[in-house]
Structures are given as C-alpha cells and as structure tokens.
Length: 383
Image 1 (cartoon, rainbow, N blue to C red):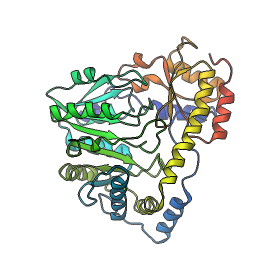
Image 2 (image 1 turned 180 degrees about the vertical axis):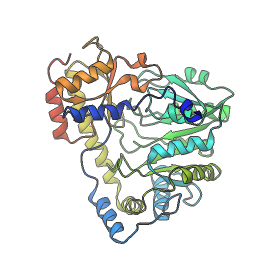
Image 3 (image 1 turned 60 degrees about the horizontal axis):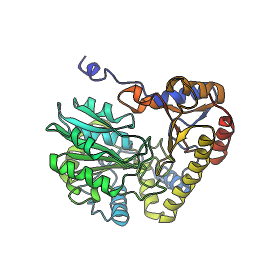
Image 4 (image 1 turned 60 degrees about the vertical axis):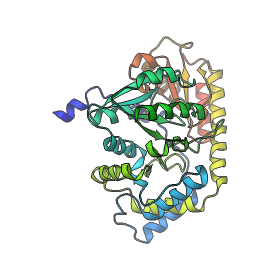
C-alpha cells in the first residue's frame, strides 16, 4: 500500500504511449527519442568480439575497470575534470537508473528536489519514489533561466536540483552565467546539483559546459551521462555517474541493489570504442544532427508551427496554437491518424498539464530519408 501511495499521480509514460499509437497506425515515430540508424561499426565489432570471447558473467558491480578508466580519461581530455576511476565513476543500466540511484542515495524523506519545467518525464517521479517533494520551476521554452524565480524555489528542505543540459524537451544548452547562478544557489543552500548530460555531444550553437567544472561545484555535483544518444544505442542501457568519492559509495550501494550491474560485454565494447574514437566522430555526430534539425525545423515552421530551433539534443518543441484549438493530446492523436506522424503532447513535460496544452514535441533522431517523408506528410495545413 505504501508503494502504491507513492505512485499516486504518476502519469503513464506518454512518450511510450505515443510509440504504441504510432505502431498501430504505421506512422513515422518522431515521438520517442531513439535513432533508427546503426551504431558505429567499431562499437558493434567490439561487442561481437567481447561476446565471442565469453565475457558473459557479471562485471564489477560499479562498472568494468576498462570502461571506468576510459571515461575518466575522456572527462580529463574534454573538460579538464580530474576523475578517479576507482572512487568517482559508477556504470549503471542507463542514465535513467543513474538518476534514480543518485536521488535514492542523497535524498531523504521530506527533502525537496528542484526540477525545471518543461522536464524529462522521469525527474518528478524519481523524487517522489524517494519520499521527497519535487519543486517545479517553470521557464519559458527557449528562454534563459530566471534566477530570481529559481532562488525563490530554494529553501531549508532543498536537497538537490536536477539540471538537464543540453535539455530535453527544449533543446537549451545552459550558458556559463546560468550555471554559475545555479552554483551560487547550491553553495548558499548546501544543495547537490544532479546533472543529466546525456546529450553532451549533440550541441549546435553553444558549447556544453559540465556543471562540475564551475568553481566550487566539483564536490557538490553528480554528473550523469551515458552511451545511448552519443552512439545511437538506446537499447544497450549503459549509463554513467561521476561524483565525489563519498557520495559515489552511497550511489554504488543503491545501484547494487537496484540492478547489480550493466551488461558486461557491452561495457567492454564501449570502453574499446571510447578509447579509439577521435574527436572527428563527435564533431560529425553534431553536424549530422544539425542537418536533421534544420530539415525538420524548416518544414515545421513552413507548416505554421511556432518553434525555436534547439541549441542541443534532438528535439523540437513547437507551439501549435495558431493551427488549431485542439488540446495537445487530441492534436497529437490527429497527426498520427490523419498524417501518419507521431509526436509527444506538450502537457507530458509539465507538472500542471494546462501549461503544455499548446505544445508538441518532435524528435529528429532519424535518417534524413525518414525525416523527408515526415516533412512530406506534414506539408500543407495540418489542422
């Protein structure tokens, strides 16, 4: 009964619900954020080799040593972060488990966790499962953080703030001054910054800056990322947590009882790939996504949607209020049934559904040929 009480108010995953609807109508799925193109050959070959070499048993619970070492080197080379692979890195079953394990490790019942909205749909439920209270801070999509409003959300019970940059669903990449503003509040209120940086290598108009590199934040930041988006392997479920040694120990204990460990041969493959891929891969990844963004974005604008092209990640959040008076859920369903294109109703990204009733989100992590067909289906009046 206690577990059931904590799930009261949880909405079914609207995103995965739209995927099911797309499948029923043979629609192009621009709702759920999974790529339809292959992972790098180097990664696939390394995985096949690891399986042939019989890496079939449990890896170390907190992650295979080669992968932890590869990630530590990468954080040093890319961001100048000194990361000890033995004490600071934990490998999880995706960034989703990483977030849940982190909050369970650092948040106590009655604490508060600040969550920006619009948000990725798991953050609020993760806080609630810890018997904490999510405190939502609204910000206009595409606009800078209102630091005065954010400051008002901090209080004596604030234990953590979830920071997603590059952000889903808005596509914002936080500027240094915004990160510094959040850092000041975290230090003032002795709060943790828990950052979701899963889209760190998918940036277009602004460089990604990890919160942990802001002065005074290395010791109060938990950095979450993973392989799903960077390598187009959302089904492999390999996430990572970088945190100070003390909190890493707590996160590892929770992770152990949640999932024991991530898949051993896939960890080995990722370690090999991170060690061998040069910066060209990451540059080309962002350039490819920029082309997809521009292709779909131009079509949406031409069709009458109001949208700002994202600075990062692979989503476009659109205002459709000039096209129809339908609710976001009804409009999303209409697009699937009448146009054969699936998107996500905007209300799923807000604590109060009415805040997103005029919004809809499209994912462009598809091949250009698929996006071109989606563009064709969306051409002309869509209401």
